[in-house]
Image (cartoon, rainbow, N blue to C red; front, side, top):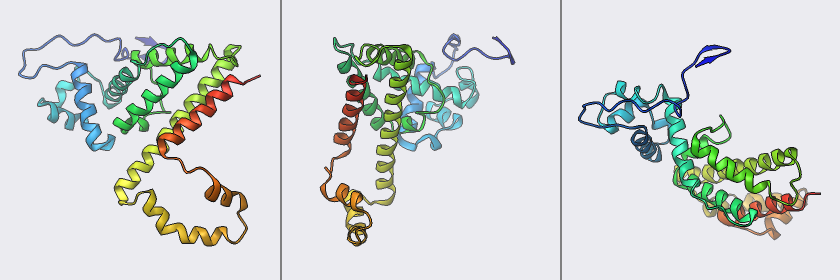
Amino acid sequence: MDTPYGIAPLPVWERPEPQPRAAPVPLSRAKIATAAIRLADVRGLDGLSIRKLAKELGVGPMRLYDYVLNRSELLDLMVDAVYAQIAEAGRHSEWRATVLDIVHRTRDAALEHEWFVDLLGGRPHLGPHALAVGESTAAALNEAPGVRSIDDLQRVVGALNAFIVGALRREITERRTARSTGTDVTAWQTALGPYLTRMLETGRYPIVARLVIDGAHLDAEETFQHNLTAILDGITGRT
């Protein structure tokens, strides 16, 4: 493909699958992505490499380069396979129900494949399933009462995506920290509770004290739903 910067390979989505080879282990991009996801689910992205994936598949590393040029293309395939799960969200008659379905499926996918959040908010995801999710989300938000122009749509899509990335990264980070340290929220509160109580009793942090003492203590799922509702309410009520 000719570009202003010279000759660049076609994206993996536009390159045809290699011709089948007479080999003990048949391969396809779908099979490679499935195996890579399985490996990353167990070891994380740091534990994923072309060499380790080839061993998992029972082939030589060079064989995989017939299907993906590098690790970045492998990650693209993996991400789009996850988006395929999210893309199963149905189109509802009401815009808000469609958005809720897509966002909750995104959270479910991130909790199942924690490495997925490490790839959110970075490079644009341009695989066919990612584009389908983006289209469904934008089409639904375009029907919201507060969206009257393409500028409005860009802003609400950006706000929703920022919330999703931030909320999921925080939730997954907390899960990882609890696993790596063996300290859950209850244990952390027990350990630091006396210190925090002493600090709040100084009277220097009255609003923080109200948040800690009087605020609702929601679990991760309730917090996610509550904040998502606030985002959608804001979109609905824009003037």
